[in-house]
Every structure is written in structure tokens, then in C-alpha cells.
Amino acid sequence: MHRRIAILGSTGSIGTTALRVIDGLNGLPKDKSPRFEVVALSGHSNIKLLAEQVRQYRPKYVAVSDADCVEEFRRQVEGLDVKILAGPEGLTKIAELEQVDTVLAAVVGVAGLQAVLAAVRKGKRVAIANKEPLVMAGQLITTAAKKYGAELLPVDSEHSAIFQSLSAGRHDEVAKIILTTSGGPFRKANPAGIPDATIEQVLAHPVWRMGPKITVDSATMMNKALEIIEARWLFDVPAEKIEVLVHPESIVHSMVEYVDGSVIAQLGYPDMSLPIQYALTYPARVPGSAKKLDLSRLKTLTFEKPNPEVFPAIEMGFEAAKKGGTAAAVFNAANEAAVEQFLAGNIKFGNIVELVRRCLDNCNAKTDASLEELLEADAWAKKEVTECLKNQRTGSKKQRTQNTQRKQLHG
Image 1: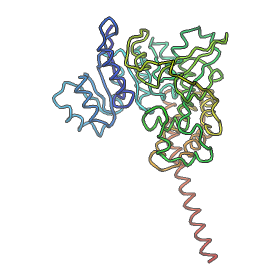
Image 2: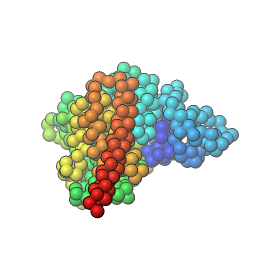
Image 3: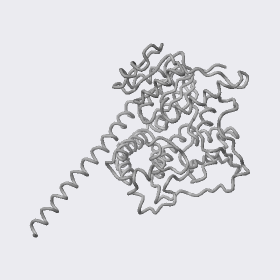
């Protein structure tokens, strides 16, 4: 078997891990693993690393989604036989290439949505590492996958675990899906102090090493809220059949409970190389680079229900999953915009959930939404976050002026 791969977001943590996984698979004897050819790569602004990847893997196509970086990238790969695509639309062009049969989507944010949909409409295998496409447009993507015969394979460790556990029974035998979470840095924190947590505290995840946006989502538990929506569409289950449990050891990546009471789980060390590899080699299992789990060294595996006072985002995730459509798109976009503001130092950590809640309350939810309507909802939510912050700053400035005037009036 020969697979021709496009990696969207090759310079991020998932993309770089995927390339290491491919190196390992291509190093196995031919009878142990399919061959993997890197046909296309994409990056945003880390063009130095992208150029290094082009020199090593010699892809035929490269997309640079930040148009301002294209000319510098051209200079860095001058002399190499590679076609360069500029701007966000380059991702879609790569996803549609006839030379590509497998697309690994690892672009953070809404940027990868249209590329995923394009790959699905071409009937490709799509390994989805970024949550946003299924959160925003789960109904559109899963409907298109059935129509065009595309394969949707999860790369998230939790959804990969569920995907693997679902092979133990039929769909109508599933009682519930159990998503696990480490609990992030604030699992045992005093709820009163969490809203004022610093960026350094938020990014200090106790288990996983991820990009800043995903790490912030883990601290708010927005990542789990988004995974609830994603699981609802990926596995065709209602939100009522999804449960979240805190599992600080991060060994049990998720579980499926069947109607007879059996619970099937997938275990492994916290290592993204295993779900990435399985999405690429499925249905085969081959030797890989993931660290093998030594059960004799595991002293304790603990599970607990998440504290809704500490993690109010989870309940919002269930709410958005039940509503679907534009509500889920607004939920995702508002969080994306709020996290960006937090990382820029413009808002407090506690404001992230507050802003998402406000957008979800104020949106005009529509269930059966078109792609255009979903993108409009995404744009509205991001604008709404900006407007909320602008109004807060105006109100604060007005209050300070009034306080100063009172002090002057009363001497």
C-alpha cells in the first residue's frame, strides 16, 4: 500500500509529530507498514521550519497561509522543485489535489474548515486533529462524508480512543461515550483564585505539551466542551449519551459503555504519535515509536466528576451540542477570539468563559445552517467579543471619570 499525504499545519505540534511518525513508518520493512509519501505541506508564518521541512521531505506543493510571508519563503526554498500556494485558499487547493489520498488536518482555528470540507467532497481519508471543523460544521461534514465516501478518522487522543473502543459493539448497543480529561492546571485550585490566573499559570499544563491556544482551552476545559460537540457528530450520538470524567493520570484516553454494562477503554501514555499513526495506518496496526504502556508500574487510575463551579465551560459545551448549527459555531468562534485576547494580555483568564457565555446567549441560533451561515456566525461571534471588550473599556473609563469628578467635588 502506498499512501500520499498532505499535512495541513505541518509546522505545529501535531504536524511535526506526524512527520516523525511517517519517518518511523517508512523505516519499517515494506511488509510491516504501508509506504507514506509527503505530497504537500502547509504552514502559516513559521517559514524557517517550513523551509526545512520542504528540504527534507521534498513535497510537490506547499501552502503558506500568511500571504505576507510568501516572498521570504520563496527565497528560502529557491532552487527547489516545489509549487507554492499563497493565502488561506492554498489549504483548500492542497486538500483537493488528485495526487493526495490522505489529508491530515492540523490547522488551529476556523482556517482549516473549508479545506476539510473540500477533502471530504473529494472522497479522501481525512485525519482530523483540529476540533473546529466538526464543532462548527459537524452536520455538513458528516453528511458530505456519507455522500462522497470519505473516511473521517479522529486524531484527538480522546476521539481516537472512542473510535477504537467502538469496534467492540454495534452503534445501537452504545449506552454512552465517556470523554476523559486530565483536569488541567486548576483541577484542585481554589475557584475564587482561578479568574485571576496568570498566563504562565494557565500554560503550565501538568501532563500534555501543546500549543498555547489548546493549552488555554485545557485550563478552561473549553477543549472538553468542544470535544463534546465533536463527538456528537463524529460518532452520531446525542449529547445526552456523552459524559465527561476527570482522569488526572491521562492513561485512559476515553471509554465507551455498552448496554450490557461493559466498558471498553483505550489506554496509553500521553503521546500523540499513537493516535496520529493509527489514523494513517487504519485499519492496520503496525509497530511504532509510541512508548509502550507498562501496566505493572501503574499504581492508581482515578476518575472524578468535573466540578461545575471550576469548569462551567463543560455545561456550555453540552448546551451548544444540543443546539448545534450556528450556536456551536458561535461557541467555538467566541472562545477562539477570547483566548486570543487573553494571550495578548487584554483580558483576565476568567473573562474567557464570561465572553463565550455572553455570545452564546445573544446569538440567533439556527439548526440547519449552510456553510455561509456558519461562517457568518463565526464572524459575528468574533466581532461580538471585540464589541463587548470595547464597551467594557468605555464603561470603565466613564466610571473612572465619574469617580475623579466626585473626589474633586468633595475635596
